[in-house]
Length: 187
Image (spheres, one colour):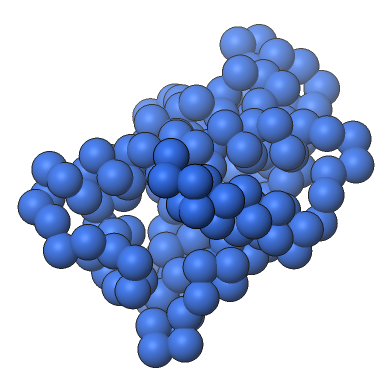
């Protein structure tokens, strides 16, 4: 990456941080591009070089967070993979994002993240070779991932808005125990 590309990426990060700061202060609908650029200490022109509008900036965050999560999954050794460990990685990752996620939830914007990440689900399934994955068609794995993502998303929506959420390890243990009981009952 050359210097100009690094500067463009840094500007995007500053704009993203500015948007999330403003989400603490006012409704998303009221936030303007000028306010975002001013908060980031950048010009409107710089904003528009990077993004078409504030929705595109939010979409950039959604895409970027999805890519970072996928990178975390790819670091897990498939030979020693245990489901509870994968859940722990999941909860630890989103725990690091909890301030931003709770802002999105409070503003009714977290569904946009879900809508943007769900199409990436089949890619996650493909590049993350968990031992419990089925060798199904794209349609089958798409349904499985939609089911899983929907459940996890609802858990995040409940967990991360709490004033004092449980730890990632506790959440992973709780879900592991609950899913194991479901499997044992044949439900």
